[in-house]
Amino acid sequence: MRGINVGLIGFGTVGTGVVKILKEKQTLLRNKTGTNIILRKICDKDIKSKRAISVDESLLTTDPDQIIRDPQIDIVIELIGGIHPAKEYIIEALKNGKHIITANKALLAEEGKELFLIAKQHKLSIYFEASVGAGIPIIKSIREGLVANRFLSILGILNGTSNFILTKMSKENLSFKEALQEAKRKGFAEKDPTLDIQGIDSAHKLILLIYLCFGRLINLEDIFVEGISNISNIDLIYAKEMGWDIKLLAIAKKEAQELEVRVHPTLIPQDHLLSSVKGIFNAIYLSSDLINELLFYGPGAGQMPAASAVVSDLVDLVQNIKAGLFKPQLEVIQDSSIQRLKNISEIESRYYIRFMAIDKPGVLAKISGLLGKYQISIASVNQKERKKQKVVPVVMLTHEAKEKNFKEALSRISKLDVIKEKPVAIRIEEL
Image (cartoon, rainbow, N blue to C red):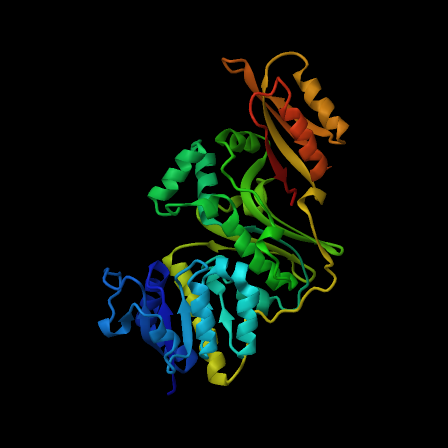
């Protein structure tokens, strides 16, 4: 029985999970593939610390060249994360004839055009199921199970850290800072959680989903990105009172010849399936011409869900190698009907707005008057209880308005002497 040799670069949390699966499920994987999957070498800058799984010391190295340049290794699994040196390792591995499996969404989102081109030139594959949704088999489903579909939209809760924070704030009336500290204590947030809470991680994942669904590998700067750090627990309370939840939503919508792409906090109806996605869980809600609507749901982070996705890619790749097939992972058809990306200023949306205003006659008239000047009509107004300092929350929902007009109106209103804090504005998706 022919064996396939694998080299692992990155023996951290997910890498340890991959090694655990390969050791504990060796017989199952051999039966599934008809091939021995042989872990030939493991590289990490720290090979001294104890892991949850023990390996022979002869497998360990701190030198990635022992994997990248080993002619016996067929597949390189990259799990170190970040752009550099992961990019350089993958390029050298491809040039040395190795197929690649990675969970590195940031690298693929920002440098994917170059990497996929190099892989294609060398007739090699890059697999990346674990890069979006961890244990959710979304990439394989889009590429294979939904291959005949033309996609219309993607709505995704793609970051477990942000979803955990918003869930905690909503359920336990915690402040953003308190919920973030809880996420760190539980290990759901990094020491520096900027990429998660500012929406960048979700944007990286959305880039890969857009390429799979629409055939366009867009740039990060093409996506409007807004994080959750300005969301208050009182906004979650007020939204809930009106029948809405707030989620950090990654959105891609095709309308005629345009594609709009954005990541931001969003009000969604409480009776929608995405509203039920709590804690660290992720969900991807797809709309297409054949299936209409489909929801993928599951753990979006964690050692074993991500490791499971990596091993799934490994099994697919081993079977393709065994069959002598070249199957580039991102060989997708571009939707030629899409001619341009819509700028955020061009979109139309309903809005939730919270003003902190002095409680005196004429305030609502001033606010509504400025909104009216920019063709923004009000759907509802709710003035909350008076505070000691006579500053009250004024919560409004608007009808659909153009983003450009809304931003200009909000800028004007925020300068009124009766407005005491920067207004909070959150877009609404009716779904």
